[in-house]
Length: 325
Image (cartoon, rainbow, N blue to C red; front, side):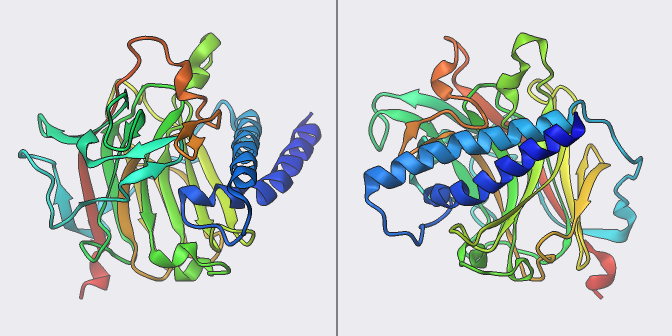
């Protein structure tokens, strides 16, 4: 049985390496010069392939159980950034509103971000009279544009995930080099500390408490490289706050949920350059049109499921104390 599953995953992975470059509209510009209708069709197909790969990974790793009791040791670190999201407005010395306009199956719009009761809230909803026309609206904030970036350390956010189909929240690190074809991971890797596409898999009695941690490097065209590090369970993450963390040093990435290690990797060669933080909610789809993907289809939500809120209590960043001397 395991051999059959592994064979299925191998086939899916081969399809994935062909199809994923065409999702470049969501990360950057594809190097392929294709007619827009052809590109859109291939990107929609890629969404189904990505879902198939994710389903295969869930088959192999479900139900997830901790393989270690390792806990993050904060005694080795010094706190260098702490945003508790108090006050009424976003801290402009740390965050900006990232990439306004069309994004995957919807739009990113700064109007979907607010600070409320000591939390950052990114809201996803359908708007008939949105700034970019009718559609599904969400948002992303980032510490790019020389606001805050760091090489190595421990990065953590405490948050509650948006409970709806066809979308996913994420806490991730990026460097501008990641989108360059052939870029080695050592020169910048997209580090997805967590992504939450599994809410709709809770239907029919299945557990949907898993989040996934991933690495991307080498650009977003045919040379793109990808590694799923782990699929791990959080504690009732759509109704309760959990912490999601990354320890990053010159040798490896180590991922944590609630301070307990969930997986580690050095795939692609560990990034050795400064990276900035991003907090986002994505709507599955292509060219601002919702399309089925690894998080389902946002149009399938029942009345009352939207708006969905990604609620972040804090973001904290630490540096290895011995690197600060």
